[in-house]
Structures are given as structure tokens and as C-alpha cells.
Length: 117
Image 1 (tube, rainbow, N blue to C red):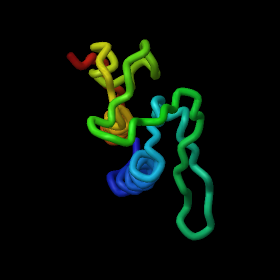
Image 2: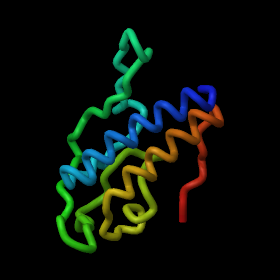
Image 3: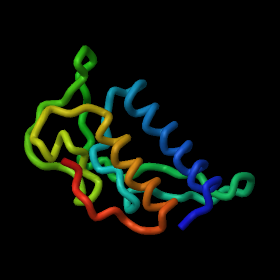
Image 4: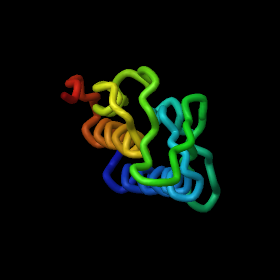
């Protein structure tokens, strides 16, 4: 469990990375989870969070509605967004959903066991 300031810093760094992927590159990661977050030590700031494992990454359409076609269940149990569970087309919001699960776990100190409906 992290204190709020540490969780906020980690979340901010990951949001910056996701913003770059989503807005600048039109790519969704597709598998945001703790195992794919790397904390790289730095002298000045303690650590820098980086995303890795782009095996499920997809390029998003560059025109509205910016959604990828659903082609089957993808992602890791416990971090899959409701639209994927409902077999609907999805966009970059699936990465933000997964990050929300991570932040909840960091602050609460436990994983939520309920499945979104």
C-alpha cells in the first residue's frame, strides 16, 4: 500500500505515458496491469514509472468514434474494462479503466473482487 502522494505521482507518470500513446500515437496499450509497469530508479526523483509489454497494443482509428473492433477477449483478468467483457468495440478508455483498478489497489491495499456489469 502506498501513501496518497506516492500513488498520485505514480498515477501522474502513467497518465502522461498513456496520453502520449493515446493522443500522439493513436495506440492503446491493451494490457495495463502492475506486472507491465516498471519503476526505473533515478537519482533526482526516486523512480520513473514506465509501461512495458506492448504485446496486446492496437492502433486506434484516427477518426471518430476512435474505436477498435472487438476481436476477442484480450487483457488480464481483473483489469479488463466492461466494454471488452461485453464484447463491444472499445477505445483508449480501456487503459484508463485498468489504471483506475491499479490506483484503487495501491490506495486501498487490496484488490477488488467484484466484476463490473
